[in-house]
Length: 263
Image 1 (tube, rainbow, N blue to C red):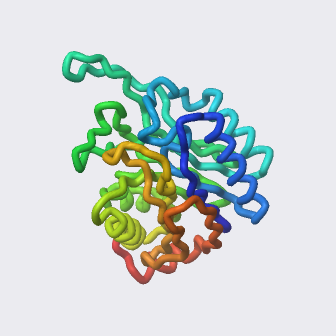
Image 2 (cartoon, helix red, strand yellow):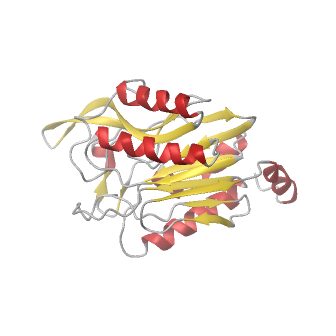
């Protein structure tokens, strides 16, 4: 199976971000990829303005454009977007929270709502994002995929449960926060999640933005990665926008799980 990893930098404008998706998806399709993974927050990058004002339903105009593109190119697209969720009171203010979604469009259709919000290092994503509750797997070309989003990668039990649910490949759209030691942690966590779930992990992050964005926001560091079921690195991007195209053998999962039965 050939998988593409589209490490982009999303901005504030949905239309421009959708054009980025089209450009990278087309390049992936030209290289015969069957699936292309984009980062978390593809619809609108973190630190570029309010998310609730641009959030759309999971089957709204933005998602429909992604679906049409997937059908046109004959490729399955996975990317991060935001949809309206609920209202909460915070310090006498009414906050319109959103769901942080990863959607799948093309030969398969699925939605995953990020479970573990980024409430760490002085940032509180749960103030504006409603935590999800359900794990997500989907089937594509006789392979079972699982989905996690960004901060979920710090929770090994989620990845192990996805593996128990049959996931052979776990996709991780992300927008990792930059800062001291963050790249080392990103590399360590992604390799560890592949090894302790004995699954392929495809972790696609936002490229490191070159414009002026809030330093405390999870705006991206790049270094998207593809790991095999033993945690070995099959491919890794740099900090800048990049398209990785990687061939994986899903049958390797069963072989590794037979010799390393840790689930």
